[in-house]
Image 1 (cartoon, rainbow, N blue to C red):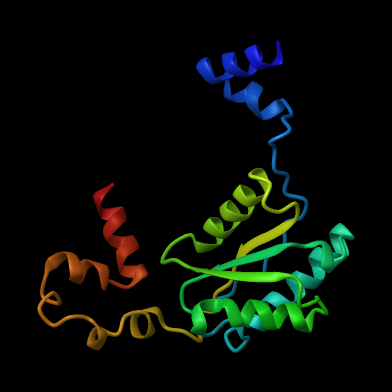
Image 2: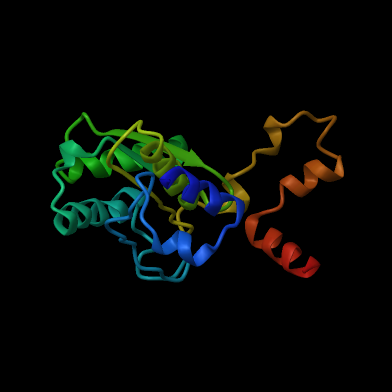
Length: 185
């Protein structure tokens, strides 16, 4: 009977009933922590490195959830501008927080919504049974890593494709890209 009810929900989805009902496949976010936002180049955190931005978050997660760090099976942190694709910042923060070497770290480098992608990947790993407990999030310090200067090194691109419009569009800084996207809506 449960299978028929589940099948009926798939064929005739009612979003409210799906949100309010429990399923063995549910992934639950037990703790949400974030760093404060400040103005780029002049805010109170402009000189704070990504690893020091993450440090209080890792400590707060353990304090709030009471989950021993050794039980956390994977940490995925998204970023776009950090050196080494961001894995060093996350790993250093974990060590400074007193977490054991057994907690693995993965960095996702994506131009937009890398933190959301990290959360999605942790949820997918939990839902598929690969891990039971994971952390997903993102970190950036736009003051220390100017996107338009550091993101694309034109010298590394093939000179024959550089003049192409699609290639030029890919080289637009995200701030300019957001203005272009808003213009089309």
